[in-house]
Length: 167
Image (cartoon, rainbow, N blue to C red; front, side, top):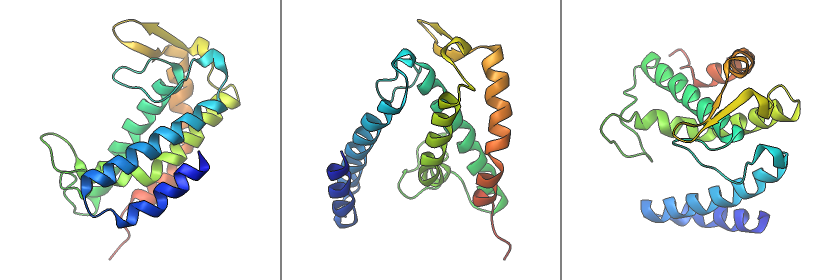
């Protein structure tokens, strides 16, 4: 995995075609999450990234945290006088704040590490989640209370990094 990620890092700057760059990103994400799964207890059933709906507790937390972080970047864009809909790597699409999507990308590893810490420390456990076939895996009331309390402790430094610097 390390060798693959190193190779992809070398190839990325030479990728002038956006589709090729997306392919490199996809291969990197696959390798990254393949390794990331090894950090979690098998009982959490985290076998890779999935969403819409998330099928396990780790993906439920990642999806929720990424969504919250996305809206932090939308707010930061507005605060800086930028249009959050006009992105660079994420091309404009109806209803998508593409610039906010771009700005979230470098912050995802911090969310991933925080999510891992929530489970490593047993702040969140599998019994804080419920699974419904149609809605996937969701935090229950106790889990939401814990998640949001921890999120409010975690997010202030990221809010500062998202906020616009004065003139």
